[in-house]
Length: 68
Image (cartoon, rainbow, N blue to C red; front, top):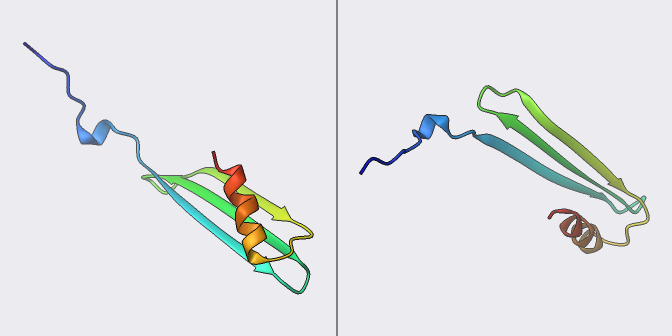
């Protein structure tokens, strides 16, 4: 019986960076996501700015709804 096994080098790898910030003075928050491949080349860049955010907790809840 012969089985096909992928070598670990064949598996695509991506590094994802995620960060968020909250500005309580202006009631705004921002969320950013960057994905890069093994060579460090940019695959995805996404930034979202939320206005009229009452607290850091509200900003975090809003961001969690978007990640699916």
